[in-house]
Image (spheres, rainbow, N blue to C red):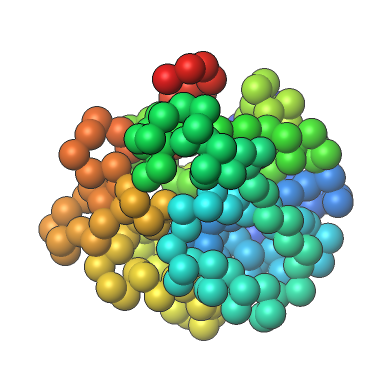
Length: 233
């Protein structure tokens, strides 16, 4: 992957997506949460290139109602296949196995059970997956490569927006009339599971509203060192 990463460093998101589609075809997926403008920009761009890239989205059971409704609205507009990934355990089963604190998506084990493991299972059917993460979002994402091999997922990880800015993402969705999650207009800047997400002040970091009050900014999907070993917590 070293040559591809170097070759695509600095390439436009369009060029990276076109390369990924040409290279992987229908063995390529996009992981999208329907929370931020980045994922929506990628869905819009992909839809203008191909209709064969499957969108993988994780429904943890803790999502905002607005996010679920928005997801349905988006899929009526874009003609791309959608696969909703769900955990093996219901919330009730999770509480029974790991304790009452898991009823409100207590990190980190909850992220492992309800996000990471469903994505691991889904990616067994794909050779590569795209994501909308950007380097400036968190310190853990600062070294994100445009293309890299993800050993734990057994697939190539492609980040077409790795070096793009927040301003670019917002400008793209505005210019192309791309819908965005309505919660973004209500003070939420980073949207995840409802129990662990809050609105933030205009001068706060966008990720400050995720897992507020604890030292956590990543669920583990995009940060290998953040992966939690499943056990009896």
